[in-house]
Amino acid sequence: MSKLAVEHNSVNLGQGFPDEEGPASMKQIASSAMDDFHNQYPSLLGVPELRQAVARHSAAQQGIPCDWATETLVTVGATEAIAAAMLGLINPGDECIMFDPMYDSYVSMARRAGAVIRPVRLALPDFSVPADELAAAFGPRTKLILVNTPHNPSGKVFTRSELELIASLCQQHDVIALCDEVYEHLVFNGAQHLSLRALPGMRDRAMRMGSAGKTFSFTAWKVGWVTGPAALMAPIVKAHQFLVFTVPSSLQRAVAHGLDNEPGFYQGLGASLAAKRALLEPKLEAMGLGVLPGHGAYFLVADVSKFLREGEDDAAFCKRLTVEAGVTLIPVNPPRHLVRFAYCKDDAKLEAACQRLGTYLAA
Image (cartoon, rainbow, N blue to C red; front, side, top):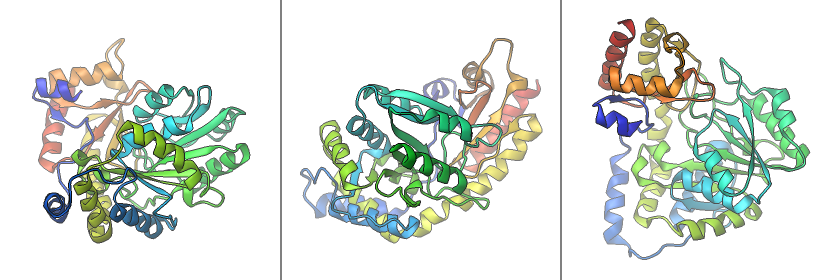
């Protein structure tokens, strides 16, 4: 969709990258670190400064202590963390439970590792967890459940009761949980992020993934991390070793500084995104789009059923909008009547997209 957006000079609200960049201090440290430190392979686990900062961040933000030496790993973004976790933990035939709709990397990497996917579709309109369907998905071959909160693409923040249900089922069936929490600081309008790993009985069977790209709006840096019990981290580390081996050390040192010294940036993300959603949501509703609730990440999902042409699904609709209206969105699929707006853009871009979209849909 981004390639199509470039071809048609479209306002791109599809790909989820912010227009605003993170703290200048982090850029300065990343640059100076190339001169101040050697530029040879760092530890495959990550530089100690960042692993220690990740452990402190885990304890401070979610009350989950980590041994930085044995329970942390720095990865090439959270996407590589997903790959390393799947390749390290999954054997052919193991079953993985995932919530639909989902980030597309999950299924691809799980299948590459030989997993059988057991999807559980979140219930509309608020993307709630269907308790009976979730319980039925667990079985004797279930190895892992992947939980993404705050959620991409919906913007849903899982509730405590939903997470407690997942924790209970994991313990009942002896299942590992992989927690994608890259949007942990991007919550607003009264929502609070709670990690599944923070719940009783889950510390020794859950891993958490984080991302400097999402936490500091430096998506080009591709610095992520995983924390979890040493026994589960060991095979993930081994997979990471033969996927990428290590991560650029200068960027790691900058992220370490950010976690320890720039909390004002990531703690202010929620309020900033709430304002942008408040700008976008009423304009879309006035056009006749059905806006679904969301309290996290930087995505808004809308129902476009009334604007679909005969035989058209969400993917075809998004392509048509890009070509004819000059606005690029992302199809959610499933279901096939929802689209995703990424509103982590400057206000002028959001206003331009709404003007183009309103004119086109009214014609």
